[in-house]
Length: 567
Image (tube, rainbow, N blue to C red; front, side):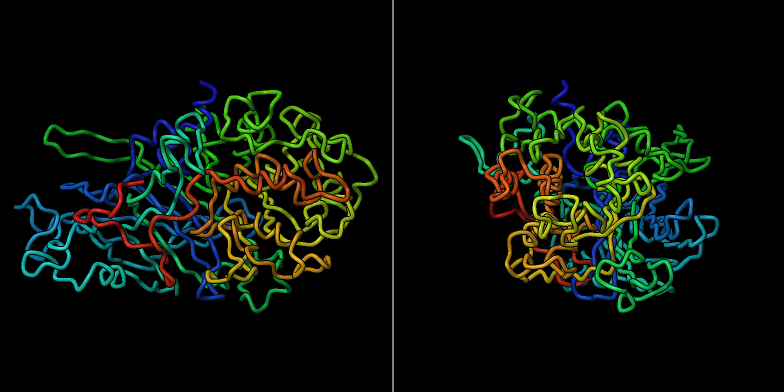
């Protein structure tokens, strides 16, 4: 049962908690925030909802809920108590032809959907409408419904409907809301089978993307950097590519009214204040970190006012780490054999659950001038002698990572993690809450760059340590994939593999706390190579992404059959 709880909801935020699994229209599935690859002056934020939409799922196809409040929340200051920017979306649907059971007929739509987008910059006290009646494209039902003459919408193709639905808000943002291909990829069947990942396949089955050919409903915003930066500065005003003043935190939510009434005439009524029923910041938090008994509670609270501190213990001693530790349950999940946590890094430091980690250094003068000093963040990063992952996993999820010692690459450190190394990240926004944090000053890695990688910052760290183009100095310089997860999240990033690698201690290794089999002359050891070679199965989406906003692939068409089975 312990194993099942750990892996039973490993699909980013698809049906991740008991209550929200029964309310798909309000279920956050994924959140993305990244430097727009075709525009260095803008950031794209994408919040997806409604999991496992079968493209064949008529006659009542999924759509945004008219009684759900969808919101995207943005922090750009650590000194304020609530959102610095909020985008609120509410949707309305109309039956244009109630005499038919078809969703589309004779040029008319049933449940034709529009939306209002409002924006707040005062913590949600007041909202201004920036799009009054945005268009939501219909579901991609089939050629007769979309392109069909007389009986259909007579559109040239489905993509023309997507392009028509992209709106420019009165405040300048580009916005799209509608059905798309689900861009997340993961071997759900393997994960549900007690973590039975199968990246190379096994005797019976090849790895499967459990979300292949499923759609979701997406809210996508393309926002100028200067609109998100706390002082209104553009990216050309950044002091360097890790300028701390350009960090934002992003999370998304869905809320419903408190009272739902079922009437005898078949109508449903809603009343009362809105209550948050779903939220999402960092991927896989509620799925693979928060225990099942706390999942509904986690969905109901915000990352503000210290609410998330009650969940910190699940990061400082993550349950998944037990299955990467041979002294615990490491033998129970053979598919994770490549992932093992440092128990004697540098001959002294044990990062397995319940062990001291770096706590033995607490108060030592050697920590002066580092993030671990008591005058800095030692109280959070070294809280006690039994919370080893407070030093790496907790900041990744709760504060972002600062460009301070020891959070610099091992390059140039000379086997001393407390020495100055090569900078590679600064997305530090110390709000002590779960958010997707992004440094907007970091340039985007071109998608056709031969060094572009779905492993995000893990790949940037590898290049910064091993590639002669970057490892000859400790200067701050751009390394490909510095814009990847967990510095924001790109659509291409393999977050499942990255987070499993992170739980196994790859970030510790990157900053110089290498694996147990490392030596001073060979820090890139077989164990590190095992971790870096591990994948959780599918490594890319099943549909090609677009090169322009909203970047997401068009939704799968219910009428069409794939050339291969759905895996």
